[in-house]
Length: 489
Image (tube, rainbow, N blue to C red; front, side):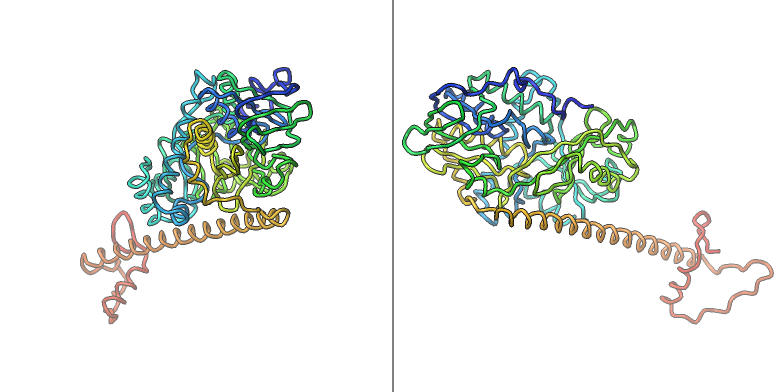
């Protein structure tokens, strides 16, 4: 079994090491939530000299932050063209640059010196379920020329050279994107924050918050805390005191599985060493521990046991890579993410001294890192780039009705993707048949141009054809062709 994705406590996460807040405390910044965003804020603020306390109702990285694939690349869940349409080209470009800074924040932290065994590796490939060559060219030009991002366009043949499946067509390769061990990163981040001076209190839920006045007050079951700034980084699990904020997020549980060792056949079918994700956001996978496949696919808008979805992951792998057969899933894990209605993270100041960083579902590790770095600098340096996120205000996610709608939309999206992909593959096969037919016709025409064919001995010659030249050529094309001799038989 992999230690990378098990629930075995990592450094700083064991029960003996966890510290609860049991005494009153004054601090500059209080962060609610010890996931990726909250710990990034704590680390950056502590590095800049602030006193920081992190309050976590359970333990570090217990939910989605500790159960993700560790892919780090620029961008947001909202497609770039939609982002430009929403806020304009210049602001979209600045947000994109911020997302790149977030990725570099992760890279700088995720070194073997800082986090032993973190195992960074380069390269992320985004593959298309449909044949979208024209759109690919346009996107590559925009990313390269306008957004200063190194990308390569891969034709379907190159994609299928490293991924033995006909399910994928073109691809966009990000050579500077990378992946790390996600669980080790979140616990390594906590360790770095502690070393920088931040205090992390686990098993310490927030009972109430009074955000009036210069010094805000936070009540926990065993103590009170006062801070000049409070940052809410608890995703969908902020709890009763902040229920209205939690209701702006649609909770989506995403599940992933790890296969048993598959040996050399895995590398024969999947020769790409980095992370692979499809353009519809359905599948996300990579090879781990040499010959195991880590695969993320099913999602729901309600909580369920991850083991329940082992069959779904196994079937999905068999559908995409039939050569792997019916693989064994040895481990399942999952967590809830908070997705916003507008598809962008919620980052900013709700009122003076009260900040929010949430809504990172489908956003990737770069955005939580970017938010942490930016909010810490906003508080301590007056950096106002967080205002770029002002157009993406808090929007109610619809409650129970929103969950049902979200599940239906997700099911429709997956079904639509499957239908579109099937149509694309049908068209590809039809084009291949057309090319084969044209090749046979051309070969028949060349054979017909070499002179009259001599009938075998004892066979009467055919009467001269009275067809038009075009019809005559078509008739010739229907006859079998010898590929070695180049003459119809």
